[in-house]
Length: 321
Image 1 (cartoon, one colour):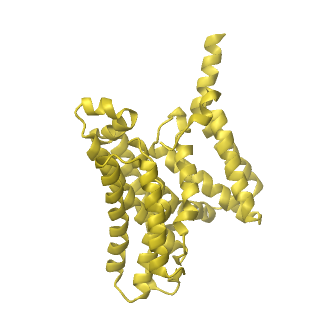
Image 2 (cartoon, rainbow, N blue to C red):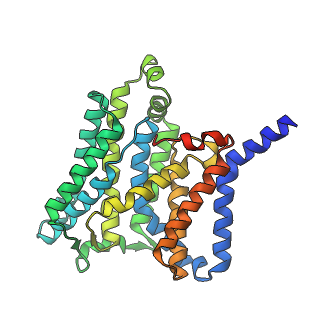
Image 3 (cartoon, rainbow, N blue to C red):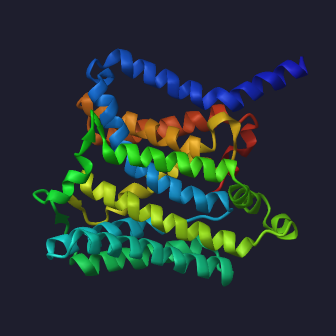
């Protein structure tokens, strides 16, 4: 009897969240005719890309055992630098390098302070978030920058067949991240550091370098996500990064419930980004007020947590790592 109970708990732990998401998708598929059209499926995929890229960046930090809240400011700053530079007459290359430089630069700052100075990643990155939000306001004067009529928006409208180039490139990046984190020696080093930094150090892994690198890579992904999000929305909206912060955290949490992994992982990030986007997309098609989307996403997270954690006593013990 005990074995049977353990087996049932194991099944819930491993497949519970996937079952919830599958049921949700089937219900929406049946209820909303427009939802199941190929064009809307591609739209969902496109809408999920900024969140996917940003969450993949955060996964590098989480998988190495640290937390990163700086994206709430870095994403907005990168988008503002990019769009304001274009409107000021600078080249697309200059604007792109400036945005990427800001993302990577603050990743370097985070990495140095956390990995080499020993500061708390939570305090460090939340400080950088406030700093970059302030810089975003200072650069833009508290206003949004729109590039609706600029040819640069062709980046998100150009297609191969019916699939946008940026979606194809982003999915290729996802595959590369998956292979790197889960199929290479260096990726396993990232995971080892996250599981136990002391054990990794004794095994000869350069723990400080791994942690530093995770923040730098995260900064790169934040800038990529910022640019795609800005181009999709035709501009840099003030504090756009702050609005993405909680959805990205939600995606990284969902990832840890997939297949009972309990650890940050790339496949879970893709599923999490799609789940949250599907809810938002379906509720928009239903003509519901925006707040119902937040309510539904919150309920999904709660249900996924309860089903996916076989030992209910540890649900509230999860942290940002």
